[in-house]
Image (cartoon, rainbow, N blue to C red; front, side):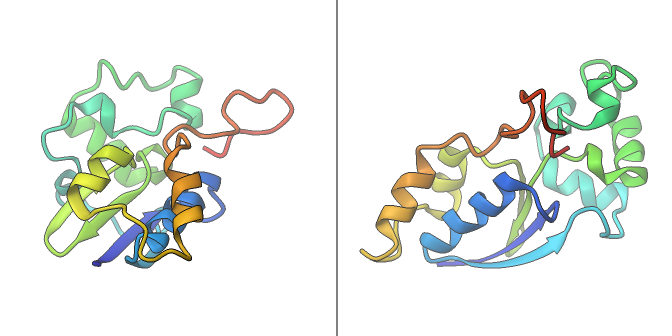
Length: 150
């Protein structure tokens, strides 16, 4: 069990499920609002590691969906500058455990990093239900009758 500093967009359906999975796995989650954090380019860069620049972006952000910003053609420096100005562009969640930082919630990667086994038998059904879901893709992004969670 570890303490996870978890930067989220409040109200995001998947961020809530991600936190529930972490808690069912016995981890302590300390939530922070990704949108109001005082980000710097240096701090943001530390979450992205060796990932390619396009993998840093929240693909459901309005500026990306409209084509105003193309993550596939943007430089790292420009991407970081844009994200500091508009944190909605940042892929969620950002997580920190001790000195290690990660972006996104690919369950296999998180499991290898900090473990996603049920903390006890009581948490196993919750953990098992959540681990089978796509916790990365916004569940509202393909619905025409609702706004995406951006």
